[in-house]
Amino acid sequence: MIRCLLLFFPLLSLLLCPALAADNAVAPQLRRLSVARSVGTETLRYPSNLARFYQERQFQLAWSDGRQLFATAEELLAVIPAAAGEGLDPRNYHLAALNDRSRLFRTAPTPQLAAELDLLLSDAFMTLASHYLNGCIVPAQVDAAWHIPREEADPLRMLKQALDSGRIRDSLQALLPPDPAYAALRSAWQDLQLVAAVGGWPQLTFKPPLRPGASGAEVMALRQRLVASGDLPVAEGEGESFDASLEAAVWRFQNRHGLVADRIVGPQTLAALNVSAADRARQLAVNLERWRWLPRSFGERHLRVNLPAFHLELIEKGEWILDMRVIVGRQVRQTPAFVGRMTYLVLNPYWEVPPNLAVLDLLPKIQADIGYLAKNGIAVFNRPGGTQLNPATIDWQQLGTGNFPYHLRQDPGPKNALGRVKFMFPNRYRVYLHDTSTPKLFEREQRTFSSGCIRIEKPYELATYLLKNSLAVSPAALEEVLQDAVNKTVPLPASLPVYLLYFTAWVEADGTLNYRPDFYQRNQRLDLALQHFRAAEFPELLSQSHKTLLE
Image 1 (cartoon, rainbow, N blue to C red):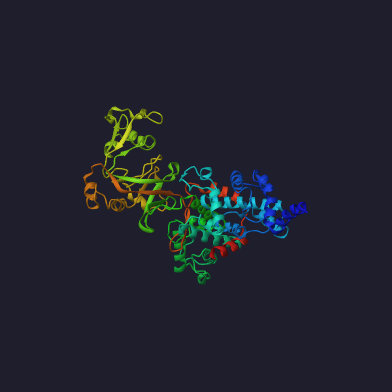
Image 2 (image 1 turned 45 degrees about the vertical axis):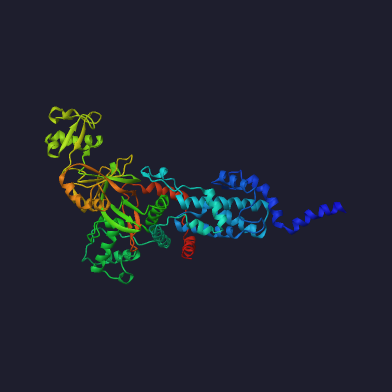
């Protein structure tokens, strides 16, 4: 009788606690699978994290009780398709395998199926969380000029926190860039994906230029093209006359594409009009990925320079304080993307000419006319900080690459290449902001004229703002100090972060979607890498994710 009771009570406990029975049966499966690198045909991206996670849990399930999925699992299964709305491929998060296994699990759960499903869900969450926080591409693999540290990612910690909170969707959404500019660009990308999915916009086949006053079928085609991209109201899509409303639409298109806004459809404007909706969508996806590479906070007060936009903006507490045009590095001397911290200004700076510029840029001018040095206030030294030499004693014709043992320095003054103010945020690239002696170049649309540093349009306004609480030089005394032409280093009352960024597409506060040429050719490698992760588009998932985001 006692023996029967001893056999009966364990059986009764299993009957009364089926979850315990399931867990006991699943634990060996989890133990075995948690040290594997794949589940079926699915490769696990975080095998070491999974092994640690389940070991800490003593190989207990996280997403189900062995018989029924928890609400957190159902939520993650619903959230994964919404990754398509971020420009990411849901298939990278075990979408098909999870759908298949979850469908089987709901009708016929087994310990093996429960263990496989649990591991795939955990791995999917960690992968998606990492991609939302850091992007899915490692910047150094596709862009050698991008040097901005990403957020510290701890996928296992993110998984535990999400499971503890029970709020899977909210936990993932909180990892995305919080800047409204990201959300606006994402919305534009989703809209453009849907346009591309139904065929995009018409291609224009006429020979440029097409000018105001023209008429005919070419004008009708131009109208339809501008309606498709939202540059011309739908109500004005008919007609064969290049009238004032069409002029305004062409001007709007040119402005938001960084073209010369002359209202004439010349070769460059026609080429921009004929970039397909699918190609523009890929351009936006590339820039969404760059947003995910950035820190989630730029700082309460910071300065941003978008290189392709040739534009600088100073932001404080979410307000735009200053903005101005800039000039950036030439193709052969590209300005990198990085973050620094501005700590001081140099008023009436000397220009210590870098050796490569001395040889490549200045030496040919000196060889043509030795008077070039005196005319431009350039002194010659035997080394940086060394003894000043008489230029007339040097045989300049014998010098060249690999044979230039001198250092050139330009004195402060109106001809100084750095202008009157230099803004310093020490970095290993020797890049800084500065004034310029050639302000007319700011009138050009594409401003790639520097040797890597950034020339700014309004140096005095920026210096005045940065020195408003300075004890060294008051804003009122700034002009006087500059007129003295005496070199002076001035510490800032408070340092501020400086972000040099590379965005070829963005949405302005008024909703205007802007594109810029990829003049440093940094988009292509990133686009190819993203296509490796995103082998096909998902218009049906996009519609679903649009709805999810609105909810």
